[in-house]
Image (cartoon, rainbow, N blue to C red; front, side, top):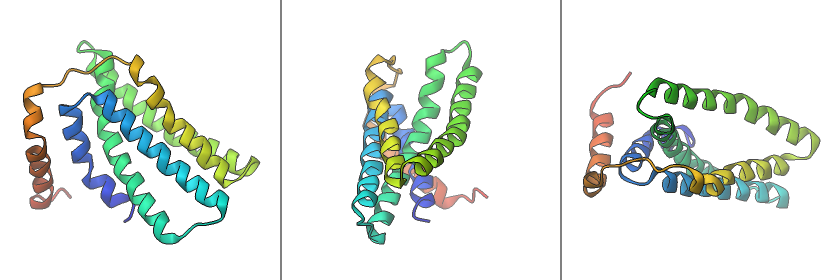
Length: 168
């Protein structure tokens, strides 16, 4: 619940931010927060200080960034392909998520086996830092500047929709 609930609820925030802001900047900030959280978890394991309350709080924060990241990438990756091939953009995004869900845990397991748990956290933090470094090389995604004034209203509308309608 600590991980799933924030990620599920804050996908709305990611959608609102993707529609209103420069997706590259939000993506870089989100990745930077993720890198810091994972790095802090690694430091906690390295130092031997692992209080359960702090782990739950950091897990919830990481879940928030995961929820925002999911919708940001769904909005941004298709824009890299262009209007001529939107299915290719969606396929590219889906493929990257699928590959990372297989390759990431495999590399993490090997890092834990060869080094230690904190090393796996350090490698993960480094990987989360990469978007911060490459974002300036990516093209901007067009957003509607008129929508920026209603960001909070749209977030409330999406959240209210989830509360009022059974999705399952």
